[in-house]
Image 1 (cartoon, rainbow, N blue to C red):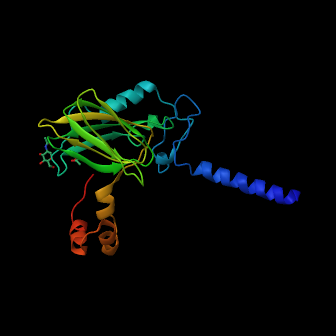
Image 2 (image 1 turned 90 degrees about the vertical axis):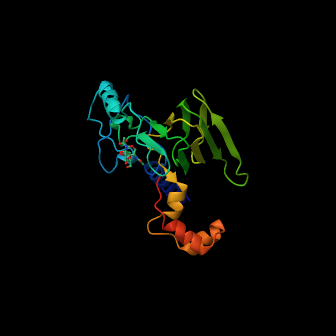
Image 3 (image 1 turned 60 degrees about the vertical axis):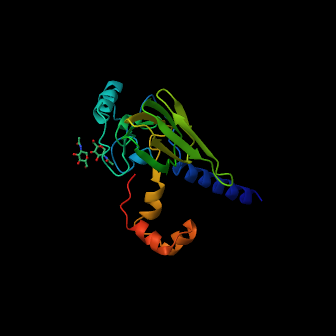
Length: 224
Ligand SMILES: *[C@@H]1O[C@H](CO)[C@@H](O)[C@H](O)[C@H]1NC(C)=O
Ligand SMILES: *[C@@H]1O[C@H](CO)[C@@H](O)[C@H](O)[C@H]1NC(C)=O
C-alpha cells in the first residue's frame, strides 16, 4: 500500500517537473534582471546568472534596434512591424514583456494573426486603424473598433486579430505584449504558405474552396 502511494507521488513529482521544464509561459524573474545569453535556448528563457549588464545599456540597445524613423512599408501588405523581443533585447529575459511598433502605409494591413504566448495592448499614435479580434468557438464573435490617436485596444492571448489602416495617411501604433517572446502565427501564411505545403484536399475541404483555388493560393508568396 505504502509502496503504491510512493510510486504515485514519484510519478506526480516527475510530471510536475516535466511541466515546469516545458512551461508555455515566461519564466518568473528570480532577480531584478537576468540578461539572456544569445544562444539556442534564449527563446525558452535561457539564462546566465553570472552575466551582468546595466539597465542603461538595455536602453541604449533599445534606441538602436527601434530607430525613430518609420520602417519601409513598400510591400504587398503595406505594413511593417518592428519587434523588440528577448531575441533583440536580451535584457527582457524573464521580465515577461516585449514591444512592437507598427508602421502602416495608407490602407496598409497587419493581416489576421495570433500571438500564442502573449496578450497585446495597442496604442495608436498617428492615423486611423480598424482593428479587431475574434473570440474562440463556438461564438466566434468579432470585437472590432475604429481607433484614433490616443485610443487603446487589447487583443487577448491566442486570439486571431488584425489592424487595418483605413485612413488616407500613414498610421503608427505601438503594442506591448505580455511575453518576452509572444510568438507570431500569420494565418494566411501558415495555412497556404506552410513548408512543405499542406495536402490541397485538406484545405479545399476545410475552407470550402475548389482545389485549383487552393493550389493557386499555395503558389502565392505569403508574408506577415
Ligand atoms: C521593414 O522595414 C525595414 C527597414 O526599413 C526593411 O529592411 C524591411 O525589409 C521591411 N520589412 C518588410 C516586410 O517590408
Ligand atoms: C522600400 O522598399 C522597396 C521595396 O523593397 C524599395 O524599392 C524602396 O527603395 C525602399 N524605400 C526606401 C526609402 O528604402
